[in-house]
Image (cartoon, rainbow, N blue to C red; front, side):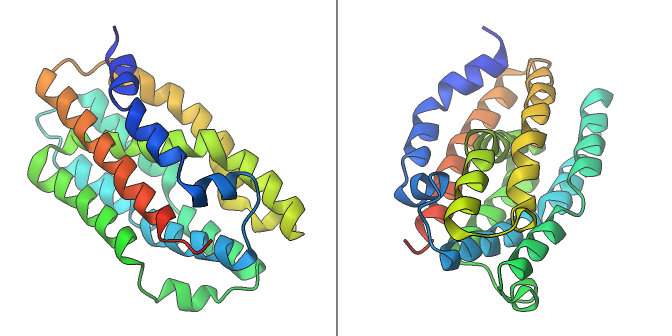
Length: 215
């Protein structure tokens, strides 16, 4: 079995547990209020703004890894830069205070997930960060496009209030093929286990962000 398939199999129960969270289910069906949607975008901003810094931290610790892995990090950085600004724009279009969000503080669940990502890169194994990539991109594929369409209809918002969700639904499908190829190049068993562990933790920690949202 390829490592990508091993990773999917080893994290399946954690993924299903997260996808069953009531707030996530309601969001995917468009059955949340405007306030809850803005609350979701707020927490998304506070972790997405760390995506490029996290990738940079990961890349800086890959000096002993193959060149293809360094090149993959560079490609991810190029793809992910500026996405947090899309979220602020969505918040503004929804009538939220984008300035207050930008200079505000995340909920504890968001702060803890971000801190764990830095901890994994700095103290455990920088390559294990790909476990977080699996969780965030895999969830977008499953939920983002469907949620955007349902929320647009139920909240009567314009298309440009969903730039973060709609872009990631389509974008992450393409990314996942790239991600699968990368995972199948990783042969070190300890690194494989570190990625699996990080992914399982991230399903729990990312799930806690959704659990913190108002219903």
